[in-house]
Image (cartoon, rainbow, N blue to C red; front, side):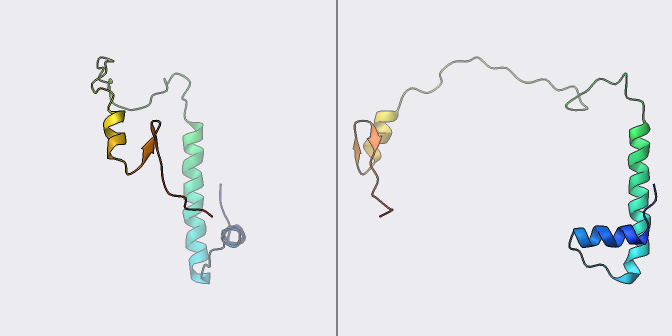
Length: 95
């Protein structure tokens, strides 16, 4: 697919990008090459390719689902300047 200079100027206007007249023709060629590459990728036969999340064979490390720290809520509430009924009390900031 080829992009002409009119299309480049239109894309630049839509993107709100200022392009000098000398840059329009080279930019049209670059965009045409990008679209040609996209056409080549779209034409690739991927019917027998399994989807993958990562190209390497990585497995997740499993660990036992056990509690490693006890409940320390009371210790943290004791550090607060003001706490009542298990809740932190903070000063009013919006009037």
